[in-house]
Image (cartoon, rainbow, N blue to C red):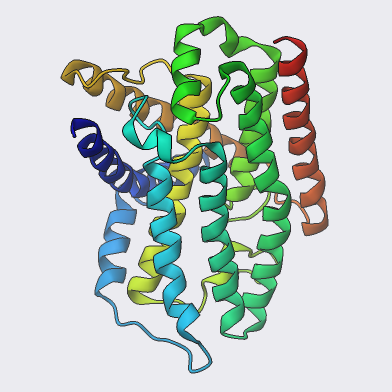
Length: 313
């Protein structure tokens, strides 16, 4: 029973950390660009404002438009219960593994694209088409990159991958791990709408992907979608942090170990946030037809990671 309660606590922790992580990345980017920028806790104020605003729905929208935000948000929460955020193994590990995580992430993307198409606007259709193009290459790469780790652990269970790495630290610097990390890092940029694939700070119609699909949303619907997107960023950062550098993840429910795990997670997320902010201030957005080339590189890196894991097993 303690394990299931802790799973719920882990989900709540992800919900609380996600807006702060997004705000921290924005703040670091502003500092790197010699701007003051909004404080890291600004997204919390944005959520409060959006939940208090009136919902305006297009007359062309169907039930799907209203239903999609809840699916997007719920699927992101479900993934936080399957990802080793601060402890491993956990009771829900037996209910979902690598494939379940990939499918849940794709479920949210699928409904977001449907919602963009539902209202019949040009921006929504354009954004949905671009999102599906990115997802068609990015999602298989996620599965392949983590599968390279699963070969060494002998299981596609994320908690087991973490515990096996803690038991055998030498594998963390193996060629397969490094290639898989590079592949997953590139996919993180694409799946979370970061530069050079997408620009989260723009509303220019020629560059929008994520923003184009949510232009018609307002009020609590927009709040749920934005919160779900921030959760997705937290999930990908957690995968990068705890699958490849799992030190600090608690293997028991001892209070001291859990406190260390929370502190370790915050530090890892902050480091990755700084790296993402530096990348976004140093690279320009790619043209849309060049994005598949970048994602193709990530797929090849993931494939090499799996090959390396087979050869060095």
